[in-house]
Length: 134
Image (cartoon, rainbow, N blue to C red; front, side, top):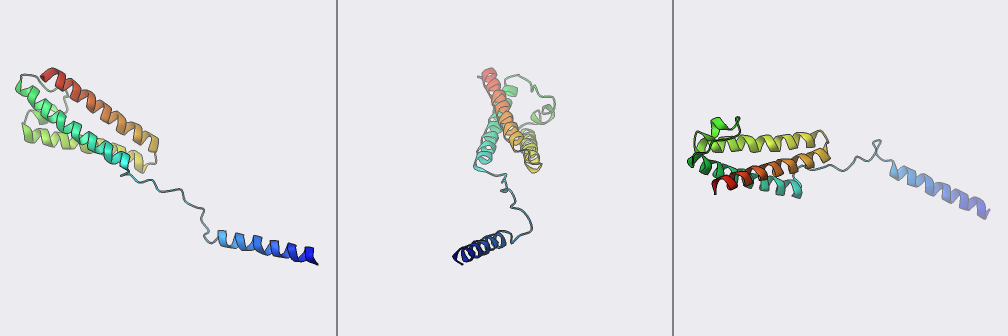
């Protein structure tokens, strides 16, 4: 009798666990990845600073007789500070847009790699501008 009562009690406990655990017909969804994490905020801030530095050093180089090496940006930077600002905004938006597109398509590793490559490439451009103008 004691054994039968123990089996019934264990069976009832098992049924109660499965009843509580399966309240939703859907499985647990994976955690939602947020785009504006601390890392992305820092990388976007660094990129904005690098683009601003690139704009300043490019205008300085143009004033010293150098010319813009990027043929896509050349029409913007030859229009002065306003054109440079528009070109820089387009470049910043394109970079963040590509990274966001990778995020939305769930390519999280490619998102991080792309952002770091963009920051690294812009760092090289700024270093090149500084080496040529100073």
